[in-house]
Length: 305
Image (cartoon, rainbow, N blue to C red; front, side, top):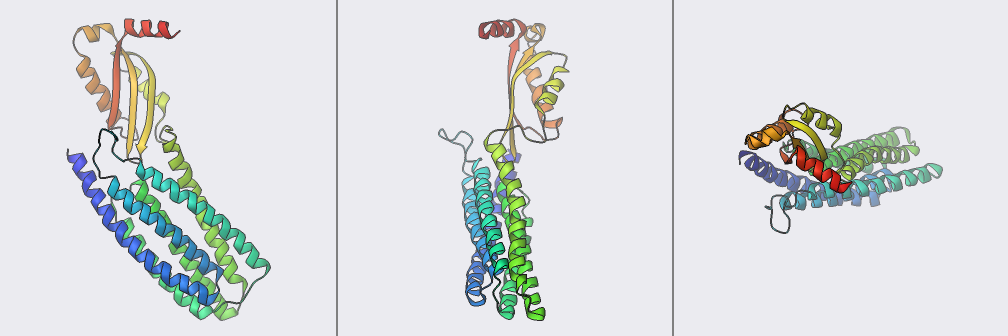
């Protein structure tokens, strides 16, 4: 019960922080969009497009953080826990597309550079940088660190670096009049976005495809269970993640017949569940074991053969 209460409190804090970050991002988006039109800067436009994607991502994250708090129902026996991962997957996919188009646009601008208004670009770049840093500090203070919030932190971090690149480009344009600075800043923002987005994409896709968490090894888990005195076999073991903070394990455990006959099956289950929670690098708090006798396991194996 205490664990559930902690998750609920953390979820409420996530909603509040995401709401503040979203509000700041919308203000930055409006200001920088206006600045992109006035200055003609590709870097500022790219940063604005990035913030637009991140703002939509924050909307998704904000809604998801509220929906995740809904209790399980007969229709959704796990509640809406997996929305956390789906939201992060969508954000990563959009960021990959934005980063790709930004890099293409940067190379186009490098081939045919155009002048920009450095002073205005500096002003709008500083507004974006300060706003993004405030949003980043708000989100970093979130203790839940769900995948949903982690995706938002990643977005804010990239936005902050993007705004910093815009500021640097503006200074170079003002001091030296080097027209390539804007395109190079845009290229930097694109290169900044894609690797991190791909990493998040792969991580979320792995969870959606129910891959084994990278902190765990199925064979190591089987071998550890087999070292228990009462265990003679393990089969149909599956370990996945329902969401970024909820690993799940199921397995059929073949137990010595004398263990079952002596009435110690309940104690065996408790020992296996404690082992799943405490022994491995990633604590598996939700585990389901089906105990089988040696005779029943052999009969079932022969039937399938």
